[in-house]
Image 1 (cartoon, helix red, strand yellow):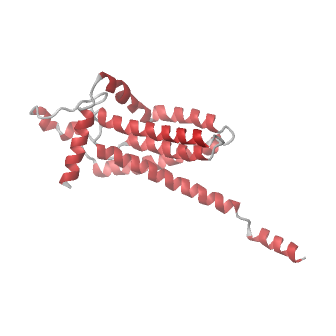
Image 2 (cartoon, rainbow, N blue to C red; image 1 turned 180 degrees about the vertical axis):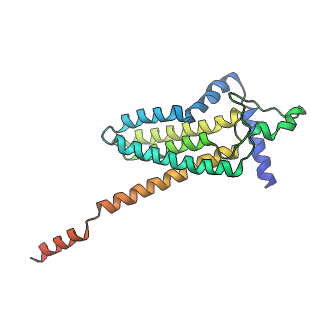
Length: 213
């Protein structure tokens, strides 16, 4: 456990301190807003409309359901663990001048585990990747788009460490929740579609009687 915590802290400082630069602020710092609901929902709405207008509302419902369920799980865990943010965890070390936590935007101190931005980003990325795989786009375009979706989600996750809001373990947990809950929703939808596509018992009987006649 100590080794895991040490690795968690080492990775935090490697990202938060080691990557700190004006370019990092522009690329990593501000990309954290993509994981905010106020930004990602409008972007998702536009993306769903462009992807398949005929199935827009069905797809929107799927994306929203995955995001809401994932968010519910995340908030339960946040309240349960109530883990300190890096700024609070290293408070004494900062006061002694032994550590530096670079904070961009709001200085958060509580409920660090798991990361909500990472959960949101990966929820949307995973469901969108599923919908892209069912679209009329070519295989090459599908692969490129799926890669871009997960790359953006990863960027958002790393940005949360860069801006000093989370430890790496927080964003990994948030990403896992986003993918796992979204996959459960996807499996449920696929099961319902299979059940709907199966012929009913009355249809089977009708077909058998016609054959026997």
